[in-house]
Image (tube, rainbow, N blue to C red; front, side, top):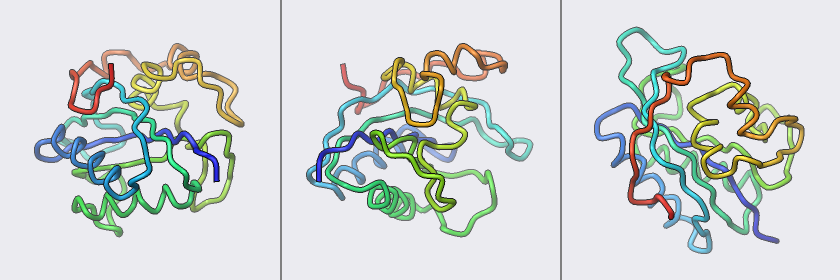
Length: 174
């Protein structure tokens, strides 16, 4: 099986969010020994979207990992890492979480399967995903998506200040 580039969005809004994001990447890479972290965006602090009033701000980023896996296998690893970090499988929609991992893309793979839709169906609508993705892959062309991350980010109507630079972290690649 050839190496596939997997784009993964990370988010946290409980406790030490930066530590949760770093631990999530560490756990993911430990679970997949042959995986290689090829890109990691800066951290971004974002206002909660569609969450209950009083919900703490999120810390978000995007990484890219190369691995010899199918999208379904990578998704299973993401779910396992979330569970390891304390995220329950059954949870209220948009509830606070110590770690959220979303598969954004898997090379040129395209699927409308309701269990695993790739590319992520709301990727082009979320500034908190597009801002870090455009930082590492501004000109990425994804199957079934007409705009690059940079173009989709520029087209968003929501205010840019809803996503603020939150700094670097231990997985940030130069």
